[in-house]
Length: 231
Image (cartoon, rainbow, N blue to C red):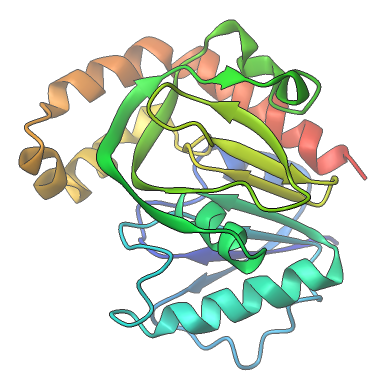
């Protein structure tokens, strides 16, 4: 049986559409709450797959949130062993940091469902199903630079670095491909304060989620399956 270790920062920012594909492939899933659980007994090389999810703090905020040091150290060790690791939003930023790249504020928020543009390399990657303009969920105010040796896969007008890969073992996504549009209400309630602070009406996001749910869920399943199958 294959194993997957999931590092989570918020209960509602979960595996989303990834859950179904991992279950269908028989993965035994262990979830660590990054701010509560200890990494001391975890062997970074043991799981077949590591997934680092998103959260509302900065990848560079270890002075405020000391547990980030343990998460970053774990990610660094996982990268050294060369086995599969997927990072989403904060998780992608932590991978970028672990690979020596800069992460910092964009100066504005990118929140809502909108398409990404794929680079030439992105068109040849597992992200190709997004080339037709399927909207994905963006929810961030920070951004990463592309690490040395990594391949830039996607961009938006607001954020030029939306995804990168390193070989077939590392995939880092700034956008939330894993987010299930059918469960967007968890996000709207959980991040209500942030939405209010930028005067973004949750009804807009709810309508966007309903409009793209079917095609986005199908694309996400195809993309994650393709990446898992690449060795």
